[in-house]
Length: 396
Image (cartoon, rainbow, N blue to C red; front, side, top):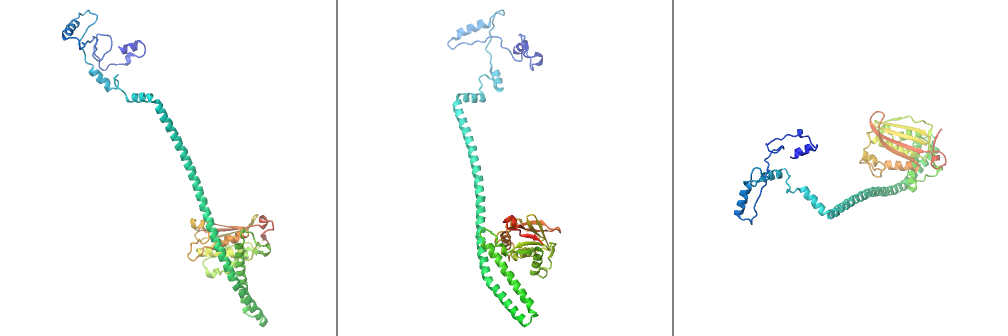
């Protein structure tokens, strides 16, 4: 009568429960299965069969008013089977209870294993941190090593370029000097014979071009010989008109005849001048203008402005631009995209500009006509900002 007892104690409400199978019983309890109110009995093996028979007869024939009634032994197999199916048999062992019991019995061993696993996990995390840190350090070292290798390769290339330049300058200086001497000698003789001789202007041009070639070689030898990039003596520098240099290079290269499809758009103030070595600016502009022409540009914009830091000259073409990989190596010696090129033009321009404490930069930029192209910026700083010996830019 478990339900009735819990209802009497106020633990549950008896009306909330309904028996699916209700079996009438003599006791005032709700039942669903047969009850076994009588006592069961059995004889031990040592008891004789006759005695067990007599005792059985006496017990089973007990009167109705007896205190106890005895009945035949009842089988509990069905009840035990039901309890086993619902995993509630008292003698049925549960897996989690067995595991819990085993863990309790071997708690010291399991504690040691758990501690070892914790230490191994911490050690694994520490080792992974060290490996990651070491990997990053190796990556940084590899990047630094590649940079040093590139610097060393560039130094070797510049050494070869310097030797080549020195050799060319030495070999070409003598022929240029001879050309100038012959031209000057012919000029003197013709002037004595006829001051209006028609060959005199041509001889004058020959002398000027030979002088220009000698000055170009002199500039190359200057930046090659300057190991620390110190500028040359200021007394050898002159005031150079930016507008005149652009016009002279355009005529000197015979751009209208060599590249008739290329037009020049330049509106530089004529009073704007720079204090530079002779023909250095013309040498740099000639290389940049030829690069734009050979890239297939149809228009070249050149502008120059003076600001507080010096003079900035900007060249913009519409020749299609430069690929990203080639743009990153634009100033690397012997790197070129043209089969007939040597990859030295921009290198020489950069060295010449840096020789006078200037800077040159390249970038892909859309031209004013909407076509892609390249922008070259030449920055010439004031000499006073560099060395305190005056200003290398001025306006007349």
